[in-house]
Amino acid sequence: MKYLFVLQKVNQNYAAYVPDLPGCVASGKTADEARKAMKMAVEWHLHGLAADGLPIPAPAIQDDYDPKQHSKSKAKTETNATETAKTPTGPAKRFKFFKS
Image (tube, rainbow, N blue to C red; front, side, top):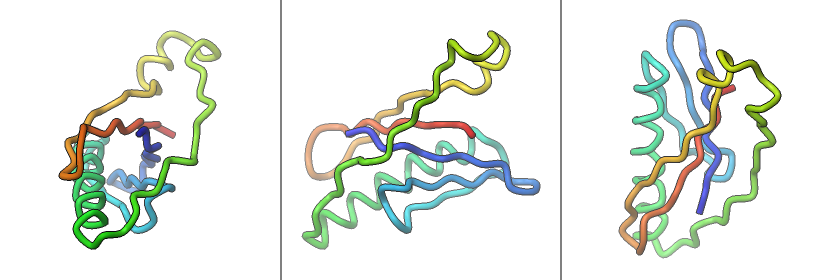
């Protein structure tokens, strides 16, 4: 499964959330720190849902970001990256990051 992460600069920090997983949020002083925290937050969120016997929601949010429409310099800083996180209920899940 791929979950879209929204990453935003907020004042002096970065905040991240997953629209498909209400309540799953993270923050960090840098974008990389927020991404790492978000990855861990999703792992724990999915683990908690599974531990409580609750269904894991299917990803519904999609992005339409097209790096071909941006200059090469922008594409390097605003690209989508896919990360993998292990979950307690089965194979690794894939999470899609999107920098806004």
